[in-house]
Image (tube, rainbow, N blue to C red; front, top):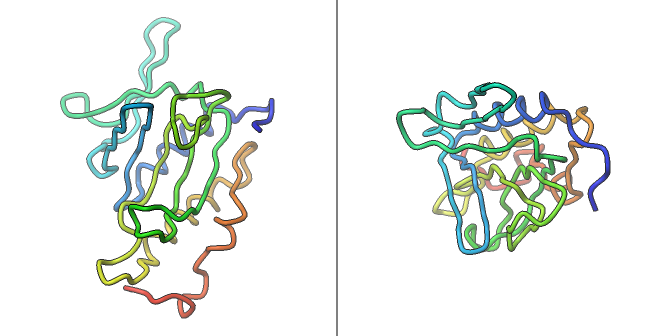
Length: 170
């Protein structure tokens, strides 16, 4: 259940800009019958904002190349999560969810407008890529004081703060 309080637009913009710097990650937009994935390194120069009269437009990626537009005013909360996913062989993946107020058409997380997720937090040999996972925790730390930014208990419990506790590729 989402609170009636909403995250401030400038905080959403800052978090999207920050999330676009995640290495080996993707922006994911999932709707019934459609999944679009944009590699963050291909969305540079990042987030741009255009004002046309009273209309504000947010574009991710270069105007001349592949890009997308998101309505950041629809984001009400941001949720950091760590869940087992099939694409990681049932292991945890680390995701930053930008959530709206109602059903957005995402069959997995109905209020999920879009997310940033790691592409390969494990090596082909199954080793944990601590450097990649830590960047999501660093993103959380930089924005954790923002109203309406939260993390799941699973995300908080999974933090690989002691590298020796995980097989590591570092």
